[in-house]
Length: 497
Image (tube, rainbow, N blue to C red):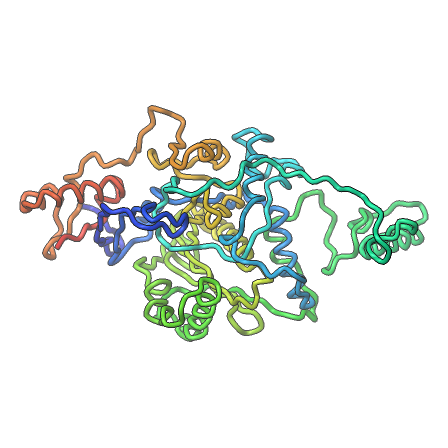
């Protein structure tokens, strides 16, 4: 049998679940049920195929940063350039926000644009309606299979815009504005007016040019050539900093392996940051954040690292993206680099830097990183953000990164999220594929070809089952085959004791 060329096969244990238990997202006591696998080893291609039967993805090649995304990037640039800390903007994680703006944005999208349209084609006013201010962290539990339904949980609002009426009254003495005097002008408007007058004096003909001619104040950063094209994500991230910048930020990609000297030398600092994050953000007890738990959760990956000649220079496998600010780690994004995607696993960061919205910032950096890898490896084209629950604020924020797709839980084809939203508003479980005749093309049709690893021997399930007498054994194996699909069931080895 010709498989596993170039490396060891994936070896997995399967754990069927018959019980319902408490959901950590909607808090329902019997709202969650899962079927799990423990991977002793896993090839990157098998993992790619598995998450293509269960996760949500963003299309980074067409991604255009939203207004709120640009705010986060500019906030970081101002902090790096001159140490500017925004006032009163110490934000929580996006998973802890109400996400009212996101809900309204979903309805605005459905009402205003053709269902097939990508975000990049929208006019500016429609773009603005989609945005809600991002918060700081993102990823939760790695390697979950996506089912686009969520058990229970209240829907977040009706999507109807709220209205307010301004009533002007005469203020009491000593309070409010003095209506007998001209209204105060914002300092920003005064600066614009001064700049405009100065330019008019320098150019009496009135032919004002460049960025400042449009009424904008001088940029903090060196001016660039005039262009009608909006700035790309990369332009915004890698904006030039002045030579005397207040801070230096460096992003390092290190393999999640103790055999890597850079990972090993930074482990202690990375672990301390993880403990600080878990205690402050998730209210874990310090005793619950030991090195063993941290290593098992985010460092010991079953993925087998691969460096094929047609792959990215860094190879495939599990990595930590470390964000170094002035010589110390302030955030770590845990990612998997696979043949077709970058899969976002988890982020932990220093709560002292919450004002930088590091969750949103790191997601944008990971999207830009995916695009960078695509230049060398053309098939690597997607950014996977994982589990999505439409009615849960802790998960719904991921829908702000567009264009993106949801996976149909019955046919396993990717469907643009715009097409899924109307169905998700009406039902927590939806079949997104609108073709009633469509089926799962990789469904298990020949379970006897499934590969089993038993007593140090590899055999087809058709041979193995003749040796078994337990009727529950066959039910579990067939359930496993239906979840992983025919291709993976023939490549991976199902461990049976």
